Amino acid sequence: MYLPKEVDRILYSGEQIAQRVKCLGAELTRDYDGKNPLFICVLKGACVFFGDLIRQVECPLQIDFFSVSSYCGKNSTGVVVRDLSKLPDVRGRDVVIVEDILDTGHTLSRLKKDFLEREPASIKIAVLLDKECRREVKGFTADYTGFVVDDLFVVGYGLDYNQDYRNLPYIGVLKA
Ligand code: IMP
Ligand code: MG
Image 1 (cartoon, protein in one colour):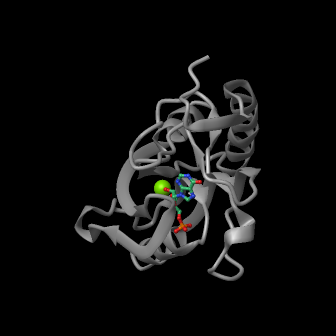
Image 2 (cartoon, rainbow, N blue to C red):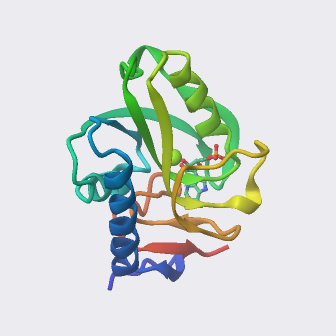
């Protein structure tokens, strides 16, 4: 197993992630039965999770992508950088925003507001990881969560540190 020297340990193996993603897919399949939801991948971090998740959803759906950034190194800048002219058209759609990790909550709460202004029929949030203990946007939660994690900086399975480690097939803890 490829374990870069900067990675301290594996938090969730590829197999554990696959099992959990399968459960999330089953939940989404039930909830979106008879609808044609639009799944939106928040780039870049959610790309791997997104590809696996949509293949576990057994109902008609469509996909789109949106690029957002707020992180620099291990710290959220608090400023959510995005190009609103590239926001997918969500009017009247049942939208599922798919993100890698919910941390302070600034990114997803901002994004949810952006989408709500464009009048979707409904909007839900799916995240692979939730660092509940780091929330700054009080009361903000996801509708579908893979794993709740402690205050650790994690990489792999799409998640990066300064754009590295996205290709690891597991979620690992970065050394301090
Ligand atoms: P928030 O606005 O603080 O909720 O930040 C969410 C974004 O920060 C996520 O989409 C990730 O891109 C990034 N992020 C937060 N924690 C981590 C981590 O442990 N590893 C990699 N990226 C992280
Ligand atoms: Mg992200």
